[in-house]
Image (tube, rainbow, N blue to C red; front, side, top):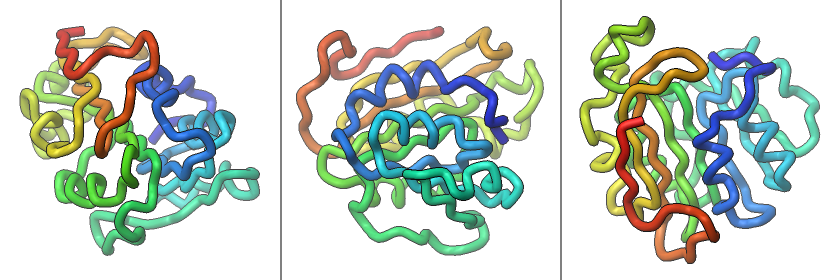
Length: 188
């Protein structure tokens, strides 16, 4: 769970400019709400979903953010198809959700995803292979979305970890200046 005083992910910051202005965004497994607040502050209507009621408590009553408590691993997907202009997921992996994430993006909707990968067990939690992406797994998981950028490898901040990151879009959308074109693969 993210703490509300944590800074937003640099990956999310880098690609949130691709989200349709004023669009509806989902911060999935939002923890303390660092990305929900970022998206709201950028003018988006935000649904902040987490299974942890205590984590959601800090978002209660915040304008522009709708906290939703749901355990997606135990219950069904609570959203209709193509209802989000953006979905942001960090530090969370439940593989059965990938088709639902793709289906829940509106045309030109943006998926920004960042979580742990195999190799992270050397640095701590998570270390269970069920919660670690295999090499290039995010690329396959988001298809047929158009991949804007992808990275995988070791990072040193905020703590040493092995991660995969992807930004993908449903349908065609011109890229903002300064953003990478089709696939940028890097070991970070």
